Length: 221
Image (cartoon, rainbow, N blue to C red):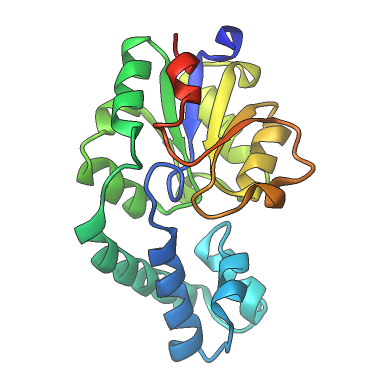
């Protein structure tokens, strides 16, 4: 394991913070109540990957909204999400200790998320962990979202680490596929998806509920 542990690349939502229910609530409300999509909660969850604009195109088609309208819808969705999640903002159990241990070991770390920059800032500053992440790759920094590997390849490049020497932390099959295409192994947090949903992805090291899993007792030794 040590030969692959020069850098850690973390997805954000569902991987560092357990907030995906709040994103689902915000999207479900906007898509149905505001925009008339008539989607079930499970249908909304299946569409929640990539950039906000991409989600709107998947649900409504490419001609439904102008770019300005997509921007406004996206802004409102994130406003509702942040407002509702802020009182509950905290790192997933065990992550604070894990980040400090990795930092003390000299392992470089980056964020590689499909979240917009303001949501990344909301978390990094809200739980005071910005010092660990000199590199942040958000939705605003890539042209193609996961499962395309651009997010993780950019993160590795900016850290100055070869992709094969990086380990990705993810919670979504699309993110794991992005890591696979980038040549990176993955630790999967089962906050939003169950193990069977990752069938066929051969770059997974382990499935864990949180960072207090016994796996981590040996991981950084």
